[in-house]
Image (cartoon, rainbow, N blue to C red; front, side):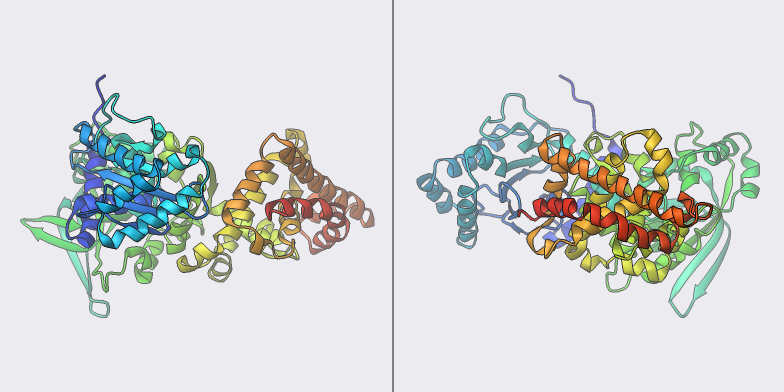
Length: 578
């Protein structure tokens, strides 16, 4: 069987990412690869790096106390020729020896310890003990994983572990495509021909910026060997498509002399600006305004064009190793150059540090968090996202607003203005800092799953939705309030139990049937509250007016909540394992 060649742009980018990471490992790419894989696949979890002489055939131990099995033992084989050679037979044999040492018990395991360094033996013993307590071998064998950038050798894998625990080049590149969306991969240097240059030096910040006319075809040629998403990763939105993009492509191809007059320009930030013979090299470039232009021309068959585009380059001088997403001044520049029509308040929040962390946390629960508009369009056809749910930054802001206030003020805010949610003060109350995301993610995830359950099951038919849609956010609010009011819920529950409980609520089993019945009861109780309360003034209290008023909140609490409180408490008890 002939294997298709990997996308060269992605493989080159991946090696670049590892080369940067390798600075922490004395430039050893294979160790950087292990570090990257653990971070990309397992996220923010505890792990021990073992790879070195005397590692006993184990490169990393990943500790997963809330999972089954509670530990993962990793072996890796790395080559820069990603997807090139077949994995060697010796690698399969060495991997099997490790698996056998754990399978055959103490005597075989002691043999593994004898060949390992003294400093790692206690860690191996701890992994052995935890794995032995994990249950049957059917569960334990899932703990072993061989990860490589080579191709699969037919017939060489052992049936001692599941086939999916052999991770080959194609699997690694799929994971990298997923990882890179939130990791903002470093782009390769960009070369631009410079015409009519002006410069500006900011002595207060020590920043020099340039304004000049660039040849748009320089960007087009660059995109032949570098993915658009890599160059625009710090933009507030990805490709939105539509008529504007088609018009840009048409002007570029058919009326290049008009391009300069019709286009507002491109803004690029970079770390260095090196110019020689009127050709500038931008080191670590990132287009923060002009993404739609690059998407429009990237698929054009015309690689050469006379089109000129006004280009502003802001040369950022990194200080103290601070990453771009943590540079508040830089983020203000990105927001400032993206204030043209159709930019939403939530667009301007998409690059905040906590949003990157939330995207990573949601990914670990198989939810694609679309922090940038158009981002889902970039990944929706990739195989690893076929089973993912999806929630946008805008929707999550609405969910957190609705569920944050017990009195229902959040519902009124969502109905009044979604944009207002993302103003500075409301935003900071809703979204924790990146350092706090890990501690508060369980609560964020619970709010999201309550919303998802209500969205999918509260309304049985399209007709019910059309008629009762005005009360939807009240359904979410009441459902979440009833569950989260359970005494010490977050003491008894964890992210894993919340996820398992809601998976059961959405399943077809007895628990799922009961949960879906409850969410429908909440919807009916909310609607009945309106029907009862409207008698006070039938002309004034239409559904639209009622569910936008404090009067409506009070009536929902007094009339609807008592009817469903016990049922919601039972669901919360299931979640808490009571």
